[in-house]
Image (cartoon, rainbow, N blue to C red; front, side, top):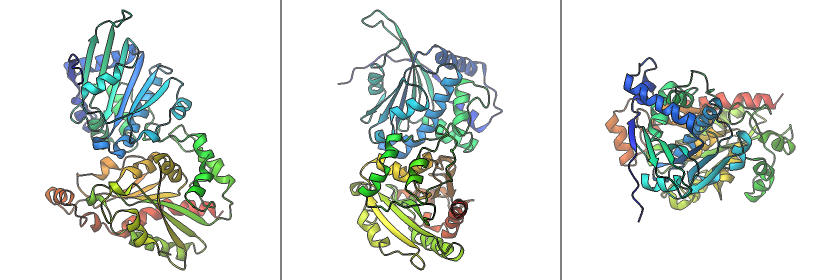
Length: 458
């Protein structure tokens, strides 16, 4: 039985939703007073806790929340708090994507990460927080399941065994406003603006390109990449993404470059495109990817006749997906695909871990993805990610094209009513998502792929 803890003093932060939609909104006197309390908590904090997770264990929400995490870390640095102890609790389903050493290298050494089982309620979270030391603790609740408007919660706890009093300040339920409301600010500024408004920082204190969803792979990950290819029986030669220059965000580095160039000779003309065609929400599963693949092969045959492409369809555990969306189904559907004049092949694999999936994705030239968790991983690795989105406001492109590297395609304005889209989701119908023409997806693929092919041929 979980111990019932005292209820903290609670102050609403719901005005952040309105502020996200209207930059010119003026705070009332009481709202300004609450903001002052938030800033004071930041200045007094001697330890920080961040809680990341997804509703019903959703991987994508964990990945998207890292955009706010990066903003928080940059805000701490801006406020002169670099070096303070940071504890990150993350849902264990996404735990393999979070490497403490990589965060320590990018920021500072006192960052620890603990995967935790699914946290059911505030009392369970409070028990986790109790494990963290510090008289002034600042907690950021970025869990996607903790829905509703955000609030500031302040609790003065009794002295511990050493006679030290403790204050725990929690910024609760930040996910909905931070991810959904601030999406209206645009992909460049959405996460940075949220954290700046939360702490009253001056505009531009946090660079938008730095506050983006980010998966950090380590040098050790890169060192095992050649062995990983052998493990999955994938060809070593491939044309990777980019020309070796450092990419902005995620530390402004391209750690994959040296490892890739060491085994990818310049004459190689095969590029690898990673594909994520599974989703637990059937209405988001696009059933016309075969048309997109064929149209791309036709384009390459006409404009880049020496170019070959490998489509790597990466699958998750079969037990998580219904029939029609399992590894054997994709093998049956795409196994004989060879493009135009044998300029393509399809490989279908089930990755053994999310870390493996991220490392394989890092080296792809781009990703083709339904609106699903691995697609968020691709964007967080700065891989251009072409995704069809349901039109309208259910699973909308505005919100779930979650990074600067997402290339979302939908029907805008939506020709369907809210009720029609809702019914498609409830009754697992794909007629609406399939109404997006493959030509629209191909257009985004060509925009992202051709400049890289042109650079590789120089």
